[in-house]
Length: 389
Image 1 (tube, rainbow, N blue to C red):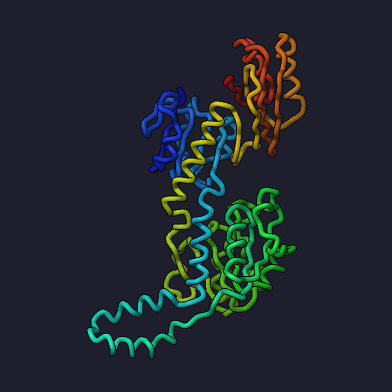
Image 2 (cartoon, one colour):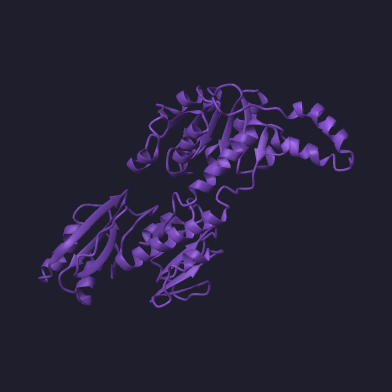
């Protein structure tokens, strides 16, 4: 029986993936083997000795102390792509709102609620509608920085809307490349891309490499009047640089899902309340993916979509399975295997993967190792955590 502690409201469709015969799931779970959560902040909270994994039902994981958990051998999962369509659709809405003064038009119509003559209202609207004119996005150029799960969908969507699409991603994965239309033009740098675009949409994670990726230098190169959309993370855009570019007329409009006090009251800024993934479908998809990844890890030791462990999976080939994580330094795996060979325990199959300073191993053994053998493995210098499944 595995104990799963939940935080926030997790979609029942995700929680239903846990068979009650094998999993105890709830908010008040003692000695949890795993957490599943959305936005609850884990920083500063005590870490139970029983905890093996955390699944974030969403793409961002700033609410999880990943470094601390890594040193404890706790796997942290996220759910990239599960909310991609929801964000993509909001980006479309942001592009259209940034192109035509729809909000201004709606607000103006509400001021006419006191009129009771339809003919008079019609004449007034015909006279005033020019105040809310805009431009079409078809035929314009869309630039996408970051061509992962969301960025690739945004790029493909731009093509479907009749736009020319250019993209930049120095770390484009094979999986993302398969999703991306061949009609998306690859650019060699952010600066080169910015000079081409009428609309610029950013889709990168928040980390030390992307902090203020959109800054004064980048905005100095942007095509005059371009619209900037940030539905990724607040930290990737330098707000002060954006305000300066707007004041100088260099940037036409800023549309973002991350409001800040200094952005309020500007007609050239459209602010949304961080609702990129706020759809019933996205919440269900994230919860289902998070639950399935936890189950596969707890039962089989497989690691898929972890933010701190390497992707590692191996089909069951019979025998007895152990997994262990260790510092990514030489000779640890050979030392562990020597423990088993010295006890005449044959290895059926194994997989070893590394990511940064962390390595993870799945090993299937022909015979069941006793507690003494497992304790000896735990004593190998550099081994952080071992499980017998």
